[in-house]
Amino acid sequence: MGALLSSFVGSEEDGVGGLGDLPEGCIAEVLRRLDAPDICQLMQINRTFLDAGSSDFIWEEKLPRNYGYLVKKALEGEEKAEGSGASAEKLGAFLKKDVYALLCHRNSFDGGNKEFWLDKSTGGICMQISSKALSITGIDDRRYWNHIPTEESRFGAVAYLVQIWWLEVRGEIEFPFPEGTYSLFFRLYLGKPSRRLGRRSCITDHVHGWDLKPVRFQLSTLDGQQMQSKAYLAEPGVWSCHHVGDFVVNRSDEVTRVKFSLVQIDCTHTKGGLCVDSVLIEPKGLRQDNIYCA
Image (cartoon, rainbow, N blue to C red; front, side, top):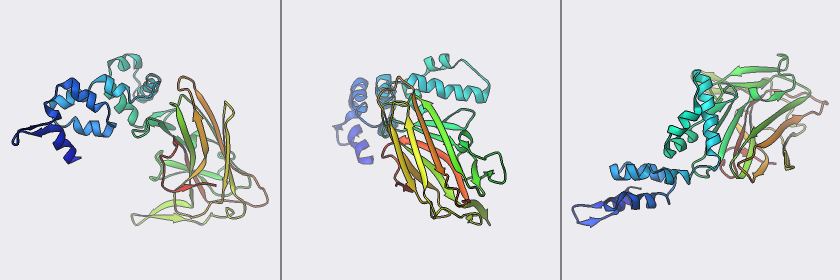
């Protein structure tokens, strides 16, 4: 990027001009063809690049078509946390680059149990849904489940399965996702995360039953899309994202409704020692690490 900056600005010593000598409008036309991270770097060159990079038309092209709704959703979450209001007035005062920056941050909603943010590389929405926002059979009975605090969860706590015969975790989300193909994952962990002498460790006392029958995952959408997968859970002590399936969004001006589940309801044996952290929804192909697919 350093060589690129040099070629853009040019050098006064050798008398060679660069893009730094161009009018602000021309610089803006160049910047609009770049990705957001590159634009932000070039805006640090000088005041001309800063002003050119702040032009609304550059950032509006990089925003989802339904960004107005997404900003209101983000501001509603802030207002509930702060006890303030007037999100519409705030939206009207934002420059488009400020709107883009706001959406790229994690924005919480539904009482802090869900978060969404804009992915810079694809322009799609990412979302994370806490286990507290899921319907888990037996969650209120401490013989079976506990909510345990951990720094290894974005939400500060996970649902920990001690032992159960009938495992059933279900969830649902209604959200106006931008157009594109999205992947849905369950973030799981075999064992109980812990710390010993300041180092991460895993307690595996309750881990059993996952090698006998696979866990079944499913998702469906209101427009008839359905996906299923299954997996044997293995590797205690490792956070893994189990791929449930993909769904396609064709219209961002409509709410997409997605239902998803994780079940293992073979009552011939018990299973236990499982942490359910969250559900992740991301643009397809974005996640590469610790993915398990059927």
